[in-house]
Amino acid sequence: MFIHIGDDHVIQSKDVVTIIDYSLMASSSIIEEMIFNQRKNKQVVETEENHAKSIVVTKDYIYFSPLSVYTLKKRANMMTTLNKLEDYSEEQGI
Image (cartoon, rainbow, N blue to C red; front, side, top):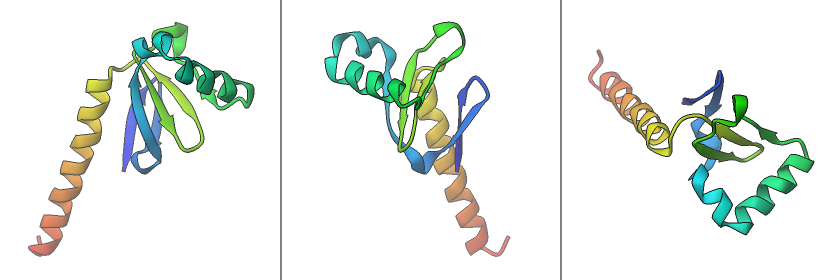
């Protein structure tokens, strides 16, 4: 399934490694170093006007999202719920 992470970016949920609160970036040298290295490789997608609330790490890219971790989690869980509903309807022959 896909998750809309804001700023017209849609990613596959299977590619998500982690979602981190943006405020943690300043307190973690490991996160800062990871982002610095990915920026050198041009694998960071910034949000418009730096209004990031969360950092979405995928297999290939790091996305700065204007949506909160909580909102992204709800969207990901909604997709899981929809998948289960689709599976149930197929089992019932609906």
